[in-house]
Image 1 (cartoon, one colour):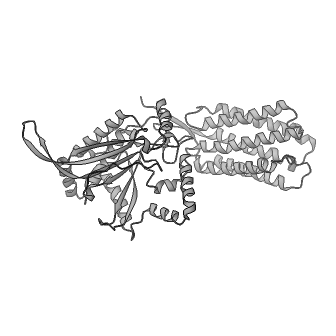
Image 2: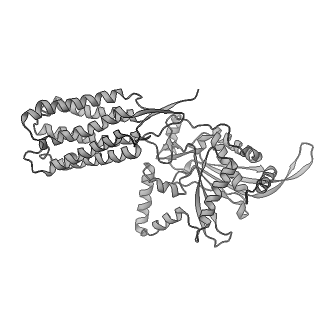
Image 3: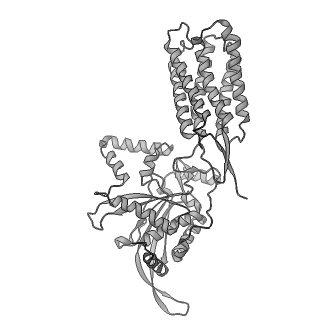
Length: 488
């Protein structure tokens, strides 16, 4: 039975999204205006940290909430839970400040404890409601939010307004109410959507979905073997290429100019990923992630085959459903775009050029900072796109250099889990079943893998499948009949 996944969503075109944003802006404005007015006995001014906890924190949270809601409301409502954490800190700080000042709002320790518990409870329940895989019903969060809002309204109308306080004195409470109502609007108006593929969740990266149902040994292995090179395995094999040669000639006759072994090996690799998705995983921050249907391959290219010819690295995106012609087209488009430049400049070269402007004394710190951001999944998406060290795999052709394939190390920077190298054609005499000897052509290939992304049996199955595609390349002409999804 096909597994179904669900999440909550809210269209950014919805009136309620912009109403919630307006309330957040009003909440921030009232707080700024209140502390800008020369009011005697203003709330929280006796607190040492009142400027930070009662002004800066809620204002940052409101801006963060607006940005997260406008940008991520479609499928990533869980992004709005992070601002709520800041608001929880603000709410607790405000309650403690009011208690210390002897405010009628928090007159005793029991009410202080209740305020802290309610703030933490709403944050917890909201976070697990909007995050896929958490609470599947919005009801608990809606009820709790409604009770908190109703309690604050009751306090305003029963205690504050009869005391003759002006509007300016009510601003702190109204400011808190406005942002609470904004979150309640989200809970009441968001729609539940279902799908046959996992939805983005908190903890995912821009370039991958975190896998949460792996065997316990997978979670331990990434700490026992923290470095990619220390967890690498080496594999070498070859395939008889008479069928491949005929296939390549047929493709060239069909109009696929310069179709060659690089296209064939890329297409075989893409097809293997569609059937063995675990080899499209990677390790980052001691967690295992899957790239899903996106296959990103890094490859070094030269403008001319000479010792002084310029070289660069390109990143090409493929889809698990691509046929051999799709692979040919996407790869050639990327190569031609780069070779059209005067100095063979890819996007990575431009970024590397900027990094080279940094003084040497600061370069090591800059690289450390990039590694730290990558560890926590905080590298900007545009850097992940241009980086040749963040990909499904790296493929290099030694055949064009006239040498056998090498075992190329994996990079500890980035997250590439597989390095594939294939060499030149060689001749070998094989004995046939009837006892005769026939000379055949072979191409050797070597693969270096990060053993932590899946077990040895799975890798062996993927290698054998890739070899079958290389021996029978006509199977790559059509899109795959079925696409196997990785685990949740």
